[in-house]
Every structure is written in C-alpha cells, then in structure tokens.
Length: 164
Image 1 (cartoon, one colour):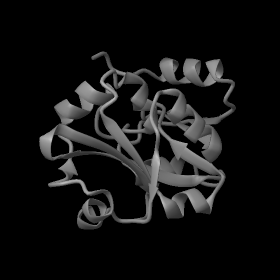
Image 2 (tube, helix red, strand yellow):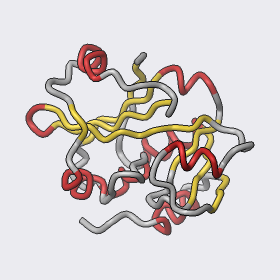
Image 3 (cartoon, helix red, strand yellow):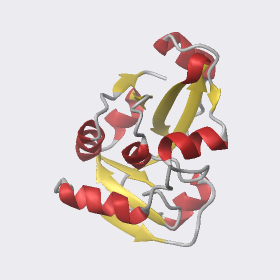
Image 4 (cartoon, one colour):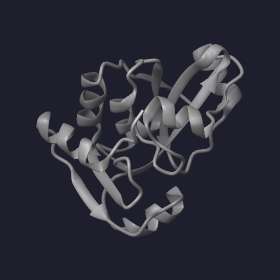
C-alpha cells in the first residue's frame, strides 16, 4: 500500500466540505514535541494508537495524549484479546503510515476496512476541537470533533466511544 499523503488528507477534507485549521512546524516525532509547536491554539492534544489483537484484529484508539493507555481495560471494554501495539509493517500495510504520524486520516488507506475505531469518551466531552498529524509530522491539523466523526463515517467506519 502506498504511504498516505498530506495532500490526500487535504483533498478529502476539501471534497467533504470540512473546515480545518493548520499549523506548519518542524518534524515532531512525539506528541510532546508536536504540542510545543501548537501551544496557545485551541484543541485537545490527541494520541492515536494503532493496536493489533488476536487473529489479526486491528484497532485505532484515539484519546487525550495526557491519558495513559490501559491495555487490560481496553480488552475488558471491547472484548479484544491479546492486544498490543501493532508492528510497523502492520501500520504501513493497513494505514499506509508509520510510527509518529498515526491518525484517523490513515483510514483513507485501509482498503480492507478491517480496523475498528474507538474514541475515549473523556476526550470527546472535553473539547469541540481535536488535533492530529495529517499523515505527516510537519503539520498539525485542527478539526471539529463532529467533522472528524463525519470524516471517519465517510470512509466507511462506525467509530465507537469507550470510557478508558
């Protein structure tokens, strides 16, 4: 699968008529680095984790970047088995992405539609605006939560909300 591109994301948002804000910045390898570049801008700083479970089940978990991920709790809430971070080759194959730029925009590249999307409830309640890398780590996109949910549904996914 080809790597997802920044241009693909922008073109799809424009096609869907979704408004967004953008901050260009030096490459950010971690959410902490990216947060420094977008200080003072409204929006929940997110982390998006691509997880793999038993029998090649894949999960995209979107949550506040300050909240720790509890894998046991995730398994209990979702019924997933033996969940861990997906390997880099799975990330590349399923989302056309790599570590450091995982975001819901990678779903555009998931031809198999074999990823279950989960949002942490607290994050959705916190703010009307969320932040993500648009398939590159040299930009941060600001998007309304409702528009992001529309984007994900338009890609053919039904995101679920869980209380992590």
